[in-house]
Length: 118
Image 1 (cartoon, rainbow, N blue to C red):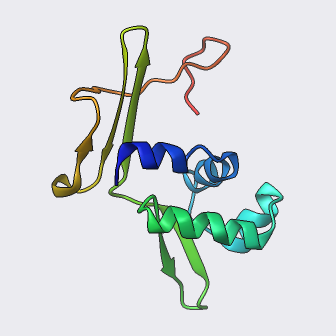
Image 2: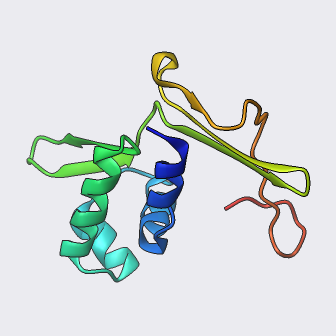
């Protein structure tokens, strides 16, 4: 997937909230809906888009409940500085796509300067 498309996909706040939740544990639609106070229909739509893009993947348990988690093959790195902007999405090596030619790491400073990421 093109890094620009991936960044556009992540431009939606509810998708980012879903990903923050999925970063803690796999979840099913109702769980996400209740935790984020977003309608199940909206959650399903966001998850469908994220799954089609390869950002999340799903598994079904013995009770036929579908759990979603962040795709294990996903990696997105963004570098923004006064000297340039670069984004790199990495899926399995054959699908790696690089916009900038270099983006060694991603570091997001918290507004309080604590260095916390989120």
